[in-house]
Image 1: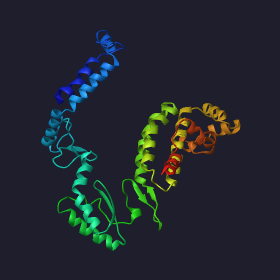
Image 2: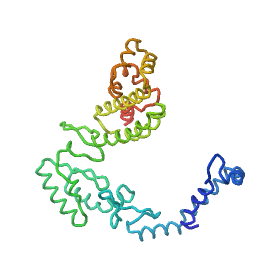
Image 3: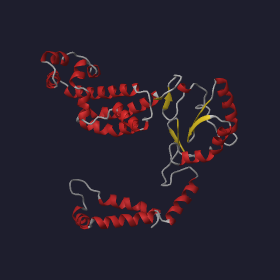
Length: 325
């Protein structure tokens, strides 16, 4: 089986499912064949297909296609271009940003760079093409910056926009930074927090017409992955603020969904507020975000309420990770 034949299989399966309404056109003819196949036979077919796809002939054909592409397009023919000014231009050199080949090539090409830093006894930390070097003074940093730039530009093109000399707490590395104390502590950068907030805002914006538990379930993978990555952070204040921001957004969704003052007052009374306070809060004519942070919503929907719904607490998860370290 060749790569072209393997690529044609999804297209054939997609053609069988075409049609409109509850019963596709091939419903009567295809349903009996599908149900007649046992689970073991499907497993055998999938195993045989995988063996043929990863056979030596197919792997060599894929390798030859990579060689012919020269970075201009992906293996599957999808264009992998360069985005400049909102226009995608064909790639003529280099590898796609974020692709698995980029860190591999960086480790190969920068191996001599690592040995040079070790020879000079510099304290450094490098991942793929990102590298931070730590010296005693700014004067020494500028001297090292000049010499290493000359060393790298013998074979590579250095991105001078991202390269700079600065205090350790002014620079970032893989989303981390550090405090300015004599014994510095790791912390999460503001840029990393903003990126996660932007992703969560999209989920919360779609959640205005859905159940709160569904919104929490959709945000859980993002929160779990984010805190697992930043489990080495030692400054906890940013996680406490983030937890409060998330709960505020969820309270804001509830306030929007209730819409009418009567519904708001009734739900606040169900959560234990007095009738007088519930009606005063429901008719305050303030916006949803203000009410989400007001005392009546905080008293009615505390952290324990969201914990029961399955909301990931970044602070609790961080403590659990650090106890395991």
